[in-house]
Image (tube, rainbow, N blue to C red; front, top):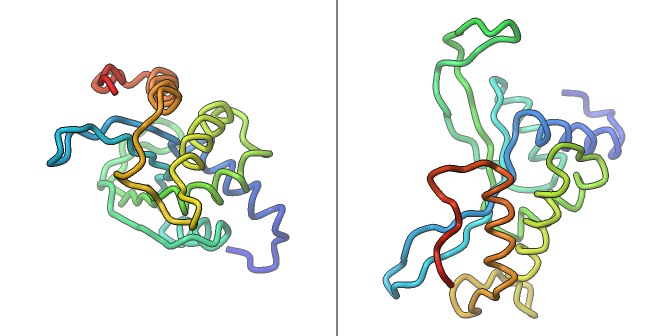
Amino acid sequence: MRDEWTVEAKVAHLACALDTDGWIALRANGHKGDGHPRIVCNVGVTNQSREFLSHLAQSARVPLNLGLNGKIGRDSRGIVTRKECWQVYWRSPLHIIPILEMALPYLIAKREKALWVLEFAKGRITPNGKVNRSGKPYTERDWELMKLVVNANGNKHNKGDTAA
């Protein structure tokens, strides 16, 4: 990747990757030991190039969480290939907030979902700048945001019907 790119070009590149090969999501994540469901935010991108995904993480100034997503994909003509497909993802609101704040001005297809997830993620940060994982109860708005994102994603196995 090009090191001489401007910050604006890097951010636009990040937004394009999120819009085309990425995801921006909120979902209910089962029950922890206390019997209460958790809402989890998740942002990521899938691509065949580890270098490209590393560049995205560097552009957003967040840690690189890279994993092998599989070995089957389709090329631009729809032909099945056997290339490795990698994904980079972030779940912490402390990482998701800067990514979405940077990408938001350039997002098109996933702009509305990004606004919802950003609102949720900002609401999970405590006054001392840490992520509140369990102490702060979810608000009605948190559940509304999750349902909006789940419905926008068309996710059939997690309709957001979990009661608060």
